[in-house]
Image (cartoon, rainbow, N blue to C red; front, side):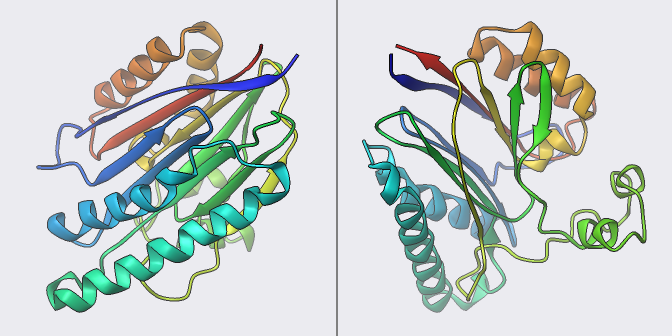
Length: 241
């Protein structure tokens, strides 16, 4: 029996923003979420560049090549963003988060790449775990014991990211994991994670076996919470074939 990935994703502008600066890819081998920043025109361009750079990885990849493939795509995204800023100096400061999951062709391994404050969660055996660590000022304060995670969720500077893809040197986090049948992955922008509590995320992931319904429900909850930001959600199930 081989493990496969089945993913569904959707994005919503939210109720406050005039446009959507998020981008996503929900494919057979690759799931990725990017949240652009740095002004409307530049933010959506940066996130689009990041997703276009990782998109070609949605093919059968040997497990020993997963991390290198993600590193290469991020290197390419960084170069393209740098080029876009060089072409139009008004784009200075534009950037994007990127959280990407790449599944091996054998189904025996997956790799994660992460930079910024979008998130990847693993729902396994009824328990939700945040796998990525936010590259944010408030996460730094939590790590130092200055504030608690609860205080971080309402901190006035919680949107300040400490690194993103901006055309300069960046230090993404890479990890590999062994998938299990029944695993459910949630990748999202902070338009979801900032307004919907982890216990609610857990409930929805548990109660909606259909990934598409699950995505729609999560976006609906973020909208009901005021939809202050763009909301991008991808749910990927590890299934046995």
